[in-house]
Image (cartoon, rainbow, N blue to C red; front, side, top):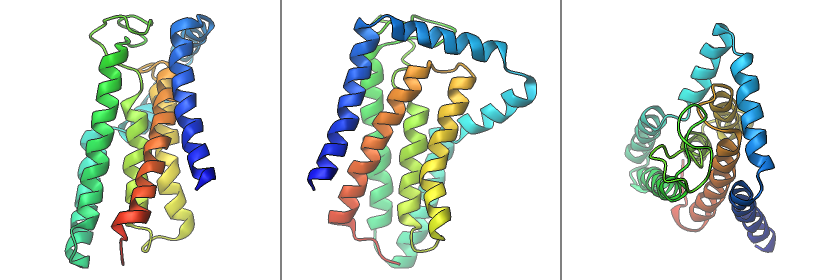
Amino acid sequence: MRRALAADGALLGGFVALTAGLVWWPPLLDVDRAVRDWCDAHRPPALHTVAVGFDLLGQRGLALPLLLVVASVLALRQRTIRPLLLAVTAAAVTSVVVEVLKRWTSRGAPHHGSIEMFSGDPAVEYPSGHVANGLVYYAVLAILLANYLHPVLRELLRWLPGVLVFIGTTYLAWHWLTDAIGGYLLGLLLVRTLTHCVTRHFRLST
């Protein structure tokens, strides 16, 4: 329990530290600009297409229907609402937390709006919701399908989409690098919280 709390605290502390650094430590903004400029200069059409595919994994419009379909099938098969309740809870919590933070921090995108935090910019990019989605939705899928997948496939489903979305959205310069890092830290924290919740309350069966 102490280790779990320490890990959760480290993720939360990392997110808070990153957010504070973006406000009070200008070199972080220079890193964001440098990464954006490098990606803009090294993005041939083929890699652009691949990166778009990576980014799509984090689209709520794609990931959420997939999650709800799987959860619904399992709910019918297992004759319990628990899989569907887990999916809906994960989606609702992730959407609310990310949306609140985005509107609070009000940061623009790499090619439009302000790089500054709390700028009042209507483009709300921090933290990256796509990256958080790529972690949370597929982690929940992995939990739901734990008894149907080989352990290696289960771990790939749990972790690979978040990494691919991180790479794709940063490489396309649709998010600043630190947006993606913030989304990843937040997504990991949400995954851990949901995992604890499943362990204590959901007790999903085959």
